[in-house]
Each structure stands twice: as structure tokens, then as C-alpha cells.
Length: 216
Image (cartoon, rainbow, N blue to C red; front, top):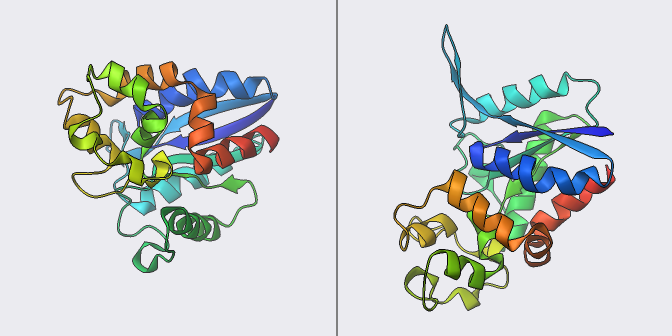
């Protein structure tokens, strides 16, 4: 069984890896081990979850790469809200979201400079996966129709292209309707109802990452 270490942005991503991604990858003889990003350390404890600076991400990845038994080290971090010091962010290039995220992932890989490291940034964030099957999301949110912040979703070819505006990124569209949306609970329940296969079919960048993990 090949071990894959995944640096996760928060608890939702950690649960997603454990409950949804790992059962699939086990059938490919891969075992995923999620690790929460460390946001800060004090004399008595480490605080985990959330991305506040690139330096902390870099440190966490370097620490994971010290595990010589790991087949691969990768990430599950949102493209939306990346810290200003993230490699390439100040000069990001590309016309489409997929081109821009690919540019940043290359800059990320170049900075870490390790053949076992495969960077993955969620376009634009975890909640994009939940738009893979709007009917399931609508049912969970108890909507009679796609309305409010769900309007005009047909302008996006894939859920990963839903824009990253302050009020229009995927999570914002959900919280406009369900103000008490709890990402670690609601997000995972919706993702399980949708299923990995549908999320892969609708989200090509995510699908490419999962495909790599199947084959690494």
C-alpha cells in the first residue's frame, strides 16, 4: 500500500480525504494520510486549520517530505483567498481560472523543488465541488428552485469556474441562502450525497488530481 500525505487547509478537507477520497484510493493500493496545516505555534500547542501565510505552508510541506516512506506529498488548499506571499500570486498569468491555477501550482512546485511533491489548489474552493450536482445541493438547502445567488450559474462551463468575488464565490452563494451553513458538517454531507464520481465528471481540475493520486 503506497502512502500519500495530503496537507489540508482545514477540517472539512481532512474529513473529505478520510471519508470520501481514501476509500476510493484504497482500491488502487493507495492510502491517504491527511494533515491539517499549522497556522501558528505557541510554547504549549500548535493551532491547526486555515492558511494564513505561505511560509507556514512551505514549512509544513518540507516537514511532510522528511517522511521517506511517503510515495507522494500533495495539498488540498483553496485557490480562493491564498495569502499574498504565495509563489507567483503577485504576477499570476492566464486568461481562464484553469490557466491561472496551473500557473500558481507550477510556481508552488518550483519553490518546493522536490520530485515527490504534487501541488493541488481547489478551484476556487471546496464548495465548488458541491455545485457538481445542483439538484442535490438545492434539495439540501430546501430550495424550491435555483434562485438568489444560484442565478446565472449556467454561465459557467464547470463548477470550478464559479468566480471568486467576495459575494459570489461558491461558499458565499451557499451562505446567502443558508446563513448557518457549517462547512465541516453540511459540506461533507452534501459531498457524500453527490459522490466522488459526479464531482470528478464535472470538475476537470479536481479529476486530474485524483487521477494522479490513483497512478503515482
